[in-house]
Length: 178
Image 1 (cartoon, rainbow, N blue to C red):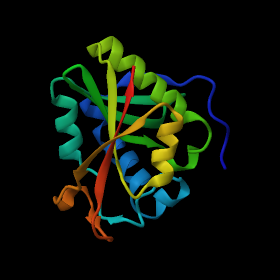
Image 2: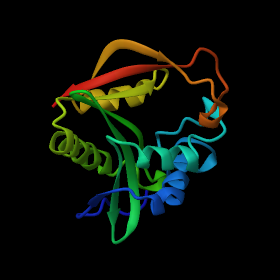
Image 3: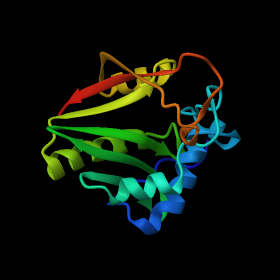
């Protein structure tokens, strides 16, 4: 394991100039051999990329949609996409640099996301979708106050977001009241 979590993580919203770094980080967390350094990898379930520059740039440009970046000494430690949906917000693409996972950074990022969606959009609920086979990840979010809703969503068929290597992938929806 690498160095301990930094004592000061500075959060900011992403800009178009951040797109290459965000795409690199997100893909390194979810896909390929580099993702195996962390525990959030989907490499055993999916091939291909998690996202691309076009997708991330569009999400940054969209109304009621931001990327929240966490940095220490100008080093990008992680990010997440947040999007308003009525009185709720969705959290996605939650990415902590693989070599920095397991050091408590995730808790700081989730807390920052909660503050951000309440202050920016007055959201009352934070939702996310997680591949239902990722039981250990679902349990992690449950320990942080999220609960399974019972809702599922189909896995996208667009190969730009991953090529399943197992059958019947679907997302489980979790939410947390803020």
